[in-house]
Amino acid sequence: MAENDALPGVWSIVGVCGGWNCEMKSDPEVLGLKRSFGFGDRLGLATPGHIEAVSGTSFLPIFAQQSVRELERTDREPTEVIAAAKSALSSGGWDGPWGADADHLQTQRDVRRMASAGFCFFTIDPSSYVNNAAESLDPHPLQVAYDALVKKGLVRRGEAEDLYLGKTFEIAEGLSITFDDPKTLKQAVVKYGGALSFTKRMAGWIGEACHDRSFEVEMSVDETLTPTTVQEHLFVGLELKRLAVRPVSVALRFIGDFEKGIDYKGDLEAFEAEYAKHVAIAKHCGPYKLSIHSGSDKFSIYPVIGRLSGEHLHVKTAGTSYLEALRVVSRTDRALFSDIVGFCRSRYETDKATYHVSAALGDVPDNTAGDDFEAWYLEHPSGRQILHVTYGSVLVGGQRPNGAHFKEAILENLAANGDLYRELLAKHLGKHLALLEGRAV
Image (cartoon, rainbow, N blue to C red; front, side):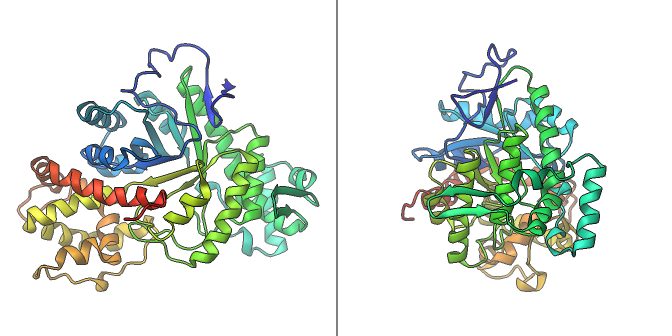
């Protein structure tokens, strides 16, 4: 396998793409270092709205984006995700490049499954190998954790110290970073050493699964408990280069809160100052794009990341398109929407366990009377999160009081109100893209 020097961040093999024609616009393809935007579609009907939202912007689209977790929670197959996108693109007349993201992959089996369906962007999720406690460990437990990584063969004793300790890296004008504290460096090794080893292994499996067709990889460490410091990002970026893993993008855990379905929560000035340093490190170590996960509805920081990132930016959205589907339901079948809300409230305490959210059931009313019910659940942060994290329960087995399945009812509603769904998606996601480009909304 050889790197494509003409398209940084992309792996390719010279020759025919194994029967999979990489030049056909009807098929997904690698997008490289151009700014890109991921449109998650959990129902398979959102692509027409996504096309309208992205048309005329500077972003290349990823129209097929699905994680293995989402596949399980929506009862879909990878081939269905690709097929739904391709069908909509054909009907909508899209003839530009587009990508397909196999999101949050954690096993070789997942890699093979997604590659065989035609995905060409692979998001490696090594979060289970990240030691979130590293920064708070005292010297002895830190050493124990370090020794455990060495014993498992995930890091080599003393290697990081030989490579980085006491060395200064000139990242950009006005930004130099020195690994001058042995403890801080060891914390970075303990926190991310296992994740880096796993990422290299996964990248190898992706190369094997893709055979002789082009692909690109992303490393994602955003779903961790503690932010990625500037020094930690530099360590990760330098190690990826040393390990010959060439990501097209890296998703970090930034400062502040990136909760699902709502705007950014945190100090905007502090975020901007820190993000500018991360952009410089990504250019120095790659270049690779910074990938903004849980990127839906983070309106307050879009102008900042759009301005500072330039071309080297990827934004990933998913649940916001599902919420706009529920908005269609709320406006066309109030009884169905009411049943969904009641069911979601009954599932929220259980389903929120795998998400970073702060909503409480008491924040929003359970009474469906009044014209503001849509606003409570599709505008209020807590209402949005309650609907967002329970999508899997709704779509797999969720039933109305009369026994009818929610998924079939939602799909029937959207099929009957396709124009409204397209319009709402184009408006909502168009706002995302406009702010990222620095345009008024």
